[in-house]
Length: 224
Image (cartoon, rainbow, N blue to C red; front, side, top):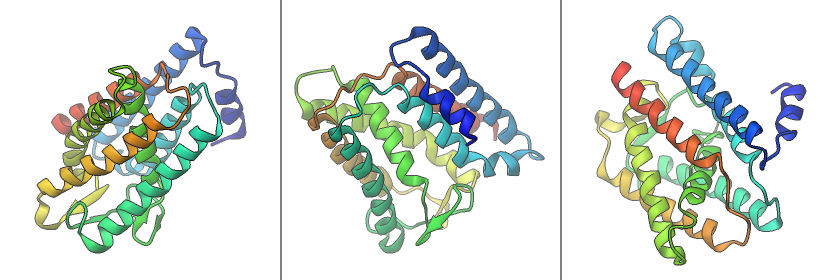
C-alpha cells in the first residue's frame, strides 16, 4: 500500500461520523468492483490476484476505527493471527481439524502450503463478529457462542465461492461437515479470547464490514 494511503488511514477519527461514512463507502466500493471484476471471465484472474490486497485494505479500514490500542488488544491481534495461521497449518498437514483440503494460488504467498493472509482473515472475522455481539449479554460464554455462530454462517457463504475462485479446494470437491465443526470450535476459542481480554470492543464499522462481506459472497454465489 502506498505510504500516502497509509497516512490517510491513520488520520481517520474513530469517533467522527463523517470519517465512518467515508470508510464505509470505501469498503462498499472495494467489494462492488470486486464483484464486477470476478463475475466477468476476462478480468477474473486480475481480481483474484488482488484478493489479498482487498482483505488487507478492508482490515486496515476496520482497525482504523478501533479505539483502544492497549497491550490486551495487541495481544489479542497477535495471538489470533498466529493461532489462525497455525490451525490452518495443522489442518492442511493432518486433515484432522477441517477435513482434507489444499490452498490454491488466489490468497497469495504461502508458508508451508498455507497463505500468510489467512491469519489476517481469522483476525478480521473474529474481531468484527466479537464487536457486533459484545453487548448481547454479560455472559462472555453466551457472547462467544453468538460470535462463533456468526463466523460459521459467514463460512457457509464463503465456502462455495472460495472453491470456485481457487481460494482452496476440497478432496473430491465436497465440503465436509467436519469443516464447519472445526470452524465453530476454533471460532469459539478466539471469541472467548476476544471477550475475556480487557480492551474497548466498540467498533462502529464492524457490523458494516460483516454485512458487506456477507452480501459480497451471496452475490458471487449467484453470479459465478
